[in-house]
Length: 134
Image 1 (tube, rainbow, N blue to C red):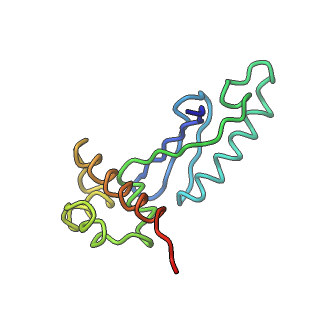
Image 2 (cartoon, rainbow, N blue to C red):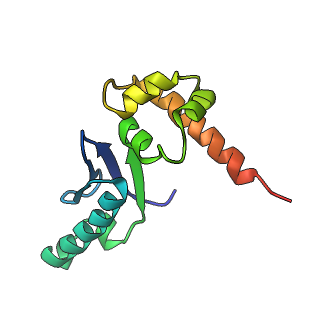
């Protein structure tokens, strides 16, 4: 598997933040996930500007592609205009009111619940990627 710069995106009460898990010094923030991704590009550019090239971390030196990881709250908030809680309920079996609670930070899902959401989305993604229209 090709190496990747892993960036975790987390939701706060009114904003989002991102940090590189495998490259110290790379952080980003914004009012939306899109803004975090833009700020991340700026953070990498600034890192390159202020860090001597021979001291660059491997992910920066080798220009690894970015892989985004999301906490459940940020994923639900980011995709809320694309995937409704009713659709997620059908995909995962998790009550849409509970999904709303996760998206709004009222409660946090257990690890098993997070995995159930991820598996439902991956199943949908696999189905959509194999779909052909005639």
